[in-house]
Length: 292
Image (cartoon, rainbow, N blue to C red; front, side):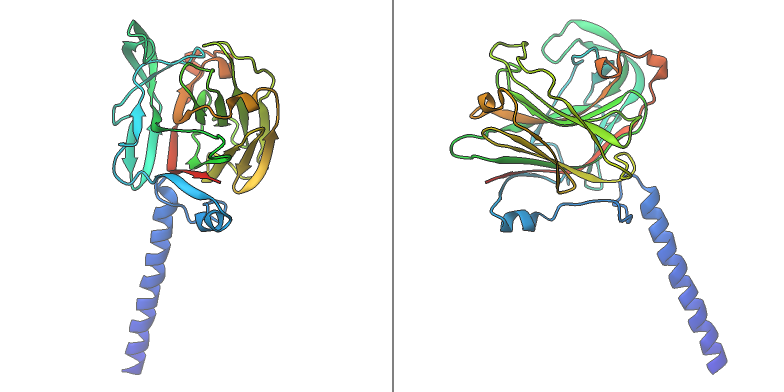
């Protein structure tokens, strides 16, 4: 009996080990499920709150996009995509926003404000927050945060940014822009102008190298603090760029909304041949905004 009991216990232990291994494997092969890899990063918001930050906006993508406006139409910068509200391009899965770029042939509005029909070779998605935010005399510091896994693929142009109406008269803050074929780097930038469609800011883009922590294979937290005379950028809780250039102070007191999108091709890639584009998917776990 002891021998048989021992065999049963051994078999049970082996089944338990196989079950754990199977579950771990399943998690790491599902791009939407939370990875168990230690190179993934998440924010401990209790630390920020203890330091004096107050959360004023939260989106966990658990059910719907009621806090967002979905862009329908083409965009600017010679981009190749039509931004669609189709579930093939924009969906929520297991508490994660999924933005999927696809090679497609569609005809739609030239932009979301220009209904003239135009032919597009790709579809993707873009959402913007219904809420506007402002760094001003009452709220001196606004901190934008998002946990994102970026898409891979040449021509993939993911972005997490903020901007105001009548661009760029209320400013624009580019928290992250990346190229899918360069998984170890991304860029930060900002724009401002006193007349619509004319930016007075130039040469403020910074390319940031992330060493060995791939932006397309792992989850990372991207942040920017908008203050009176500075923009401070964070990657995974660490300051990675500080801008104190001309016109940052001019944005103080203006109002901006959050944008999340996955563009395709265009000027950011020097207008490549559409046949060279390799499509991919952008994942967003959550978006938070804090004030101090």
